[in-house]
Image 1 (cartoon, helix red, strand yellow):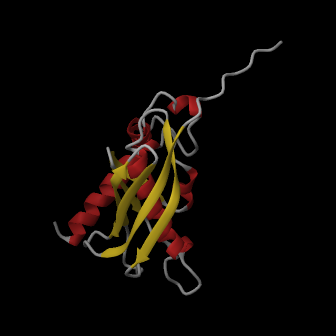
Image 2 (cartoon, helix red, strand yellow):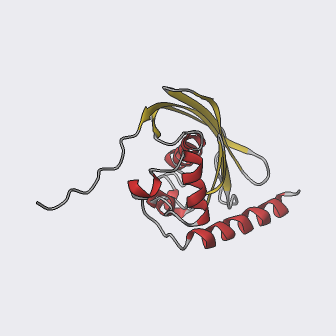
Length: 186
């Protein structure tokens, strides 16, 4: 596939996902909505539009496109709202897109009743995202998922296959508290 056909396929996948997720909108799922789901099923529900997409996806113009056990792919649109004072895409945008792919790769491997939080995030920026780069993808993959920690790696690439950044994470794995039951009136 050449660069143009890859970009065309990426844009089509993005349009399809935006249409699916429009039903649930932007927000945060309620604990009761996800309590009976493992991490993979939570993310698949988001992809189907059964659960809302997180607000950060609107703020930084990226979205989850694909997920399977131990792997997550996000696609982002670098734009004028993401520029630093020198006119380049801010490193925090790269980091947030990679962090999302890393975290959701780990999330997809969490059994029901388990959660995680980032302990360490390491990002290497290797190339500037220039004005001609319309989309990039962050592809995250778990390396290790254990009872107490999980690690993952991710790459940020363009439709031409160029690497823009890569990163790793270490996450703390923990038991989730069950959602609080509503108290009855006295």
